[in-house]
Length: 370
Image 1 (tube, rainbow, N blue to C red):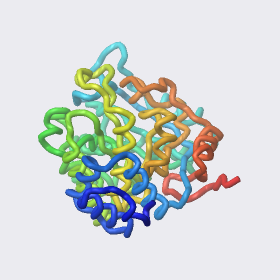
Image 2 (image 1 turned 180 degrees about the vertical axis):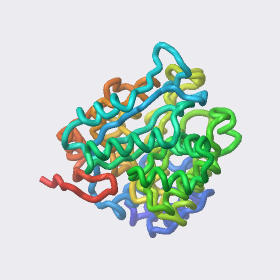
Image 3 (image 1 turned 30 degrees about the vertical axis):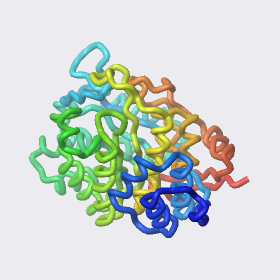
């Protein structure tokens, strides 16, 4: 179908965008909006898969990983958040010993620990740095992906350091990469409505760019399905694409769906699964300098994750080991998120794609091709 544009009934605007994607040309922000507003789901899937196959063939990757959420006590009060607490009966703040116990109890095959949580008012950069250092002493080979830009912003400012100085300290402690959390939506007006007191868009981008310049890889995210419009989504992805042009150090892009349970924005309905798939597809098409688009399965569920593999997604995250509560508290379908490697392999094979186990830097560990 990608080579038979003349046989498809399209508007002239969509025909132009289709032709550019089919010939591997970058599309503009306005053309991204056209895809969101005018393209049907079948067309989006066709275009997104064309891009994905060019970049990754038929391979779909996963990693053996687990999460640590050190605390849900947080100085911020984001409207969409179902996770953070000030101090209450359901707040937690794991001690360093408790965190090391979680690391020691994790499956021996895990390659990555993902650490993120609330922004605790009393923990400083050295508290978190020593946490990384102790984890590395206990399991020297594990990749530590830790602390969103929101957490990093607070701990560095608390230490009265520049972003460069603070990130250098964290790197010396053993930080390998940083997750993409806290990006939410970059449009400043929407951000003011949903997370007014949180790290600014400019600081989020500067922290990631500084990390990249220090050789620290990171992910990028976008929270969608709340007050934002298609224009805001494209603007968000454009800012990420521009930064990736400069650094090429974003490992993957992860669209994150707003879930409406147990938060101040529960009055908003969640967007449909069709919208999820559309968003994956446009992300894959628009972010031409990102190698990987990830579906975070604890957020959208296993079935939509499997469907997303037909809409440009090539990464389905990891085994998780029932170690995260962020989306469970927001009403995610799977309240105890965990998947075995065998389940990942089956999920991918059922849609005639090739499962691939990866490490945190997307080096291939094993191809399950038969």
